Length: 372
Image (cartoon, rainbow, N blue to C red):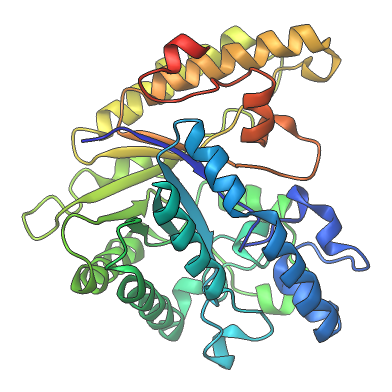
């Protein structure tokens, strides 16, 4: 099995304000739903077309390929087809851009993991779920049916493409442990719509993922990966899809070492120990049951004095954290860095800048050790 060296194309087809605040200029919108509701329609269409045409191009695919990256995780929205006003309004579909990505990937020799990143009424309440503070996807059967239909449409459309590596069922369904934090971090802009929001249960996910697998496998041969996210409950899947009825199923987990607030001092050594002692052992444990990928990670971290470091000290810190994570992720099937690029300042999230600054290797795969 070839090791996956991957990068996410975040903020291209699913918007995240923190990655490119200029897209939200002229509004106080915090998410894509707000943006689409607030901007005049033609202004929205023009702004999204300009962004989608320029944010990612074939030249980016070529640069990525030259770095030894072999697979792209491309987040797409549930409204990608723009075909059903019940679910696709007020948004702007973008299937032609995913078509374009497949053409480029075939041309340069990259593989694609399609990641369904949003769902109607949201599966997490994150800004990247499209509507802050709302998490009601699992509460309506019509939402679930729509997502399964969209997954089937994507599978049917790209099943024959040599660039298709796999499809991820749904990004980051939120857990009960995380939900209170999400409510505080991403307060609902529409409290009425958010009423009744709650986390996504494991029992729901067991059933939903099984139904989604059946729909996807109807269209996809067994050489194509079907991936599911752990729902922030990494070790809850040891008895899931373990029979012969399920083939080529992979588990995705997202590990960010600097996301949650911590009390007291936080040093590089503490962060490295967390990566190597805690995260590595957990993903290795789950690799007994599924091929595991770390589908999102970055270099940003919560060292206490990070913002006071000199450029040289910051270089050493980021290199140390990068090396620890690459070592840990090497124990499983692969990874996808979040994200390829962003327009805003947090450099530890920007793969291209991290490579250019020497925080990450300038080539991944067999040559990586010689280039870092």
